[in-house]
Image (tube, rainbow, N blue to C red; front, top):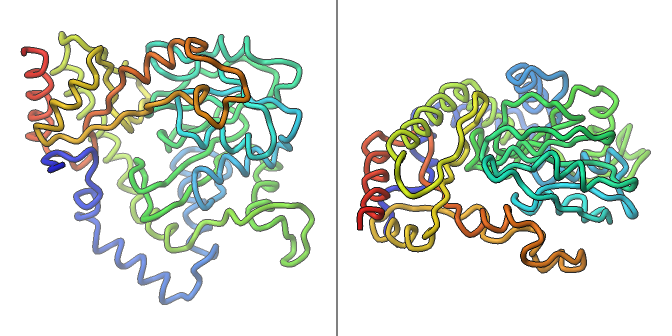
Amino acid sequence: MTVKIPLFDLAAELAPIRADVDAAIARVLDSGQVVNGPEVVAFEHELAAAIGARHVIGTSSGTDSLLAIFMALGIGPGDEVVTTPLTFFATAGGAARLGARIVFADIDDDTLTLDPRAAETACSERTRAVVPVHLFGHPAELPRVPVPIVEDSAHAPLLAPRGVASALSFFPTKNLGALGDAGAIVTNDAALADRIALLRSQGARPKYHHVAIGGNFRLDALQAAVLRTKLPHLVRWSAARRAHADFYRAALAGLDLRLPPAHADHANHHFVIRAPRRDALRAHLAAAEIATEIYYPEPLHLAPCFAHLGYRAGSLRNAERACAESLALPLHPAMPQRSLEYVVEQVSAFFRR
């Protein structure tokens, strides 16, 4: 498919700071320290300051961030973890890999984030954690539960943690993106941060003396250097995302679709509309050379790998309806105004037919 308007444009975002990124990469290559080291430590400190948190532990990916948190909390067979079915697989997959049983609770029909009341109802005496997701950048309302809350903040990198820890992803398309896989864990709990740091490097302290079974969840110095270069621009990029989202909301108001609700702390990672004729609208936009994406085509409670949990179609109706109606429109900080206007023009044209 020929694309005139991409969903995101990494090259356009990188272009104004390309010289600084090249210099950061060269700095790491000249140092010879490409795993952990001073670049990683500096990035952890700078990100903690930007978020207003006490501890940041760099990791190899957002997936490994979640896995390391669950490991640090001691989650395993016989435990239950409550989360949303409308999220990327890693939110549930990390706990499932450790042998925990995933309990899915339905989403709020407006925000598409985990319904806190449904999460509270889903908890049992075996629940060891609840995992809300700040989906598409919209801050989730946290449930009131007597177990640790682990926040999936992959779409909202500057939100301060309100639970025991937050998992961040720096996949290249994220609001703060690396040039490959990278992630981080944010927490205000010193003991938990220390445990995660131990598990990040094979549970060894000192080197080759393994006091716990961990993994290789380390952040590469090259990615840390790139992220350090991009971090000072994140507030400006976030403001651009907010302005683009506000333009969409104003320009698309009145059409036969549902717009994502605004929020003062919304990171605007994606702009996801809901349309009754979603697939026809997507085909129309594709013909107009506008890229779109469906987040997500299948709710996790209906994924084949979770069939043993016994969920059926109709079990979690809000999530299932969202998967049938949701469509992400192009949104990135470098998006020109004329591109935004073209997207609005084509969406409006579809509803005028």
